[in-house]
Length: 431
Image 1 (spheres, rainbow, N blue to C red):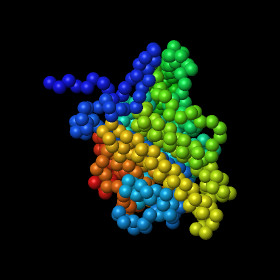
Image 2: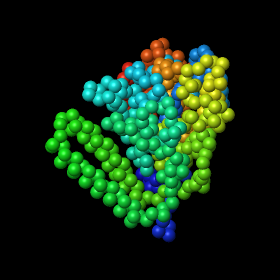
Image 3: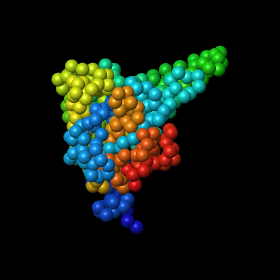
Image 4: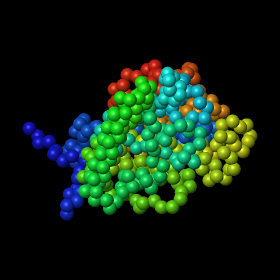
């Protein structure tokens, strides 16, 4: 009987009392490429990118359908990746009602006003469902990123794109420096101090829960429902603390570049966030990402004196519309850069990280505060078997966006039969 390779593809280098976790290495997989192709399955990743105020209504969507479509003016910077992404027209969150909320329900497809007795109630976002499976073996189940509050106009309520199982907003990391420190931060805090901090956080949680349970016996039924929602939020924090404890004595990987400094332009901020995503993937610290991107800062950087709100309802000849086109083109340029980065990273089976990833890019608003046929682009191959390189135009602009989310979940191995108001797996793109 052939002895199995006892060395994990996640190698720990040890020496002088220290340990360092390396990225997954092909060297320590099965002995032959043929065996590797049969036995080693590369990880799947999901990245969700969104922004406020929608897109340029006449210049973002392509002309024609299928593989022979004409690339639109705004997506032209993506031309070199044409075979690796598709544009999807006529997808909508049918239950969306707020023309200023570009991101709030983009990943939930929720009817936020549909819960009796509640003015606003969101539901779990698709990334969090994916994270349960894809994030089980990584330091972070998911990473939520967001622009600063000042640069998040037109996105709607929420602290990021992500929402917990109880419909509560998950806070997003708004600083590339903060993300850098989470991924590669120096270990100036001792292991004992980190253990103490975790224990202290648990003590605080236990005390809060104890007080809340005591109060629960003295309040009305409606207030008890609110407290139960609060309990659910605390349980989510407990889950993250459990994850932190599991990785407490595992040193972070060596940083791939120096810690960023100084104030950044919008393009620099997005590029650095993309570089950090790629670094997190390369060191296999996370496999599910959301990024609610900055928007307002683009206009000043590109030389326009307009506000994002004006770009949603303006004439085609106006400065606001020209600013919208310039913003869309720069965003597409940055997306093409991210794809370049992921294509340059190899997985243990020899395929690229990009091949094994899915990137969703879009917004919950089209333009003119229109909530139907919202801009939607999907890049990557999710491990293979997808029909990329096309413009899919679905029959009705009431086609649920949730059909796409369900298809993406299934593509990466999440065995869900339904998500939100989905009517089935989205046809065409997923074969």
